[in-house]
Length: 217
Image 1: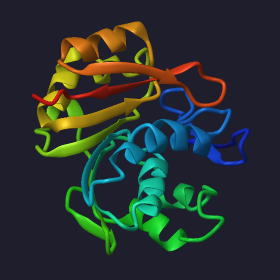
Image 2 (image 1 turned 180 degrees about the vertical axis):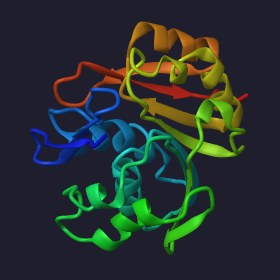
Image 3 (image 1 turned 120 degrees about the horizontal axis):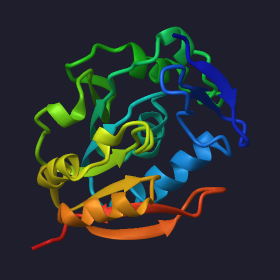
C-alpha cells in the first residue's frame, strides 16, 4: 500500500498512511508541530548538554530526526529510532523538508542500514530499529524521548503503562519525554509509571501536549 503525500497548512509535507488511514503529522503544519512539540518543549530543554542520547518511537518521515540533526551542530547526538512501517526512499525524496538544503543527509536518514549505528553527520549517529519498541530491550542512559506514535485509538499498545515504565527505566534522572497527545488516560499512565507530567500549550490548532520528566532523586 502506498502512502499519500499531503501538503499541510504551513507548506510542509506529511503523509496519509494507507495502512492506518491517518496522517503522520498535523494537517495544520507538519514542521510547525514538530518544532513546537519535539524541539521547543523537548530538545531545547537540553541546550546545556554537550552529549545527548535521544530515543524516538515513530521515525515515520524522519522529520523529527532531521530537525534534531539541524539544530544540534554544537552537540553530539546519539539517536535511536523505532519504526515497523518504514517509508521507501522514493517517497522520502518527495518530502519538501530540505528546500533550504541538506537533501543528501535527509535521504541518508532513510537509506542508511537498519539495526546498526550509522554516522549521518560528524555530530549525529543514527540507529534505526525495525522492531516493535514494546518488545525490544531499550538502551539505558537516554536523555530525551520523542513519543510520536500514531494516536492511542490507532496504536493502543504504544500508549499504555507497560511501555511507559520501560521508558521510565531507560531515561536518566531528569530525562524528558514529549508527545503531541494530551489525553487524560495517557497522562494518568505516565504518572502511574513514575513521571512528573506537565500539560503544555499545543502546536497550532491543538490545545495541549504533554511533557513528562523522570524525577531526580
